[in-house]
Image (cartoon, rainbow, N blue to C red; front, side, top):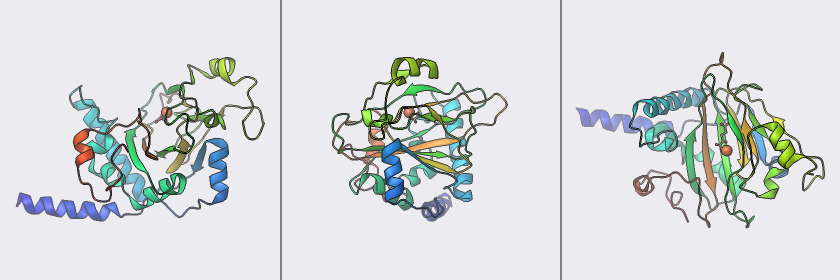
Length: 267
Ligand SMILES: O=C(O)CCC(=O)C(=O)O
Ligand SMILES: [Fe+2]
């Protein structure tokens, strides 16, 4: 009886694997040029309503496990290992297609981390991430799912367009003022020549943001009066270098998850 139930739930999970994740969108040379000029690209409202509903359930499940589980485990960091829906999305055809349009055919899964920010969450300081800092042939892209979106000054993603061109993994600042004084002031965008500036984004429900990993970014605090911001990031990269952000437990790498063949190893 138990076995039968198990089989049925696996079957419905397989069907869910192919549920539509994204609404129709365009990624042509214009979007590509914007991504490469700015370091990030917004697809407002790209996730389908059903995808948002399923993601919110999955993200709440991971959050519950992180609150209730043992302290030496990190469900939020290894989110796809703690929730079968997130696991199934690693090889979702639409997500892989998007990642490959940016990175080319040879890609690896790097991490899936939940980025839920509940009321009063402090946000995140300015930072960049590393990957193949000296070799621009190897790319690393973060694909953020802002499931219920965000307004300005409320768990909002901040960026400095053009900052990824520096490929500097160590830019850090505690606040906008420090960033301006210590890094930004007087700097020109390497390809447009315009003065570089901070931009705070807004995202309607279901927004997907692509971001080159060397882009300078931060997050504003979540208001006390706001509901949890439900967010998850799926990151992919070209193989060739070690990756500091790669959160994959060895047993997960060895699992034969349908569709992930060739995606899970470091190189
Ligand atoms: O929470 C966010 O919106 C951004 C999180 C972040 O900095 C990251 O995942 O690299
Ligand atoms: Fe980040």
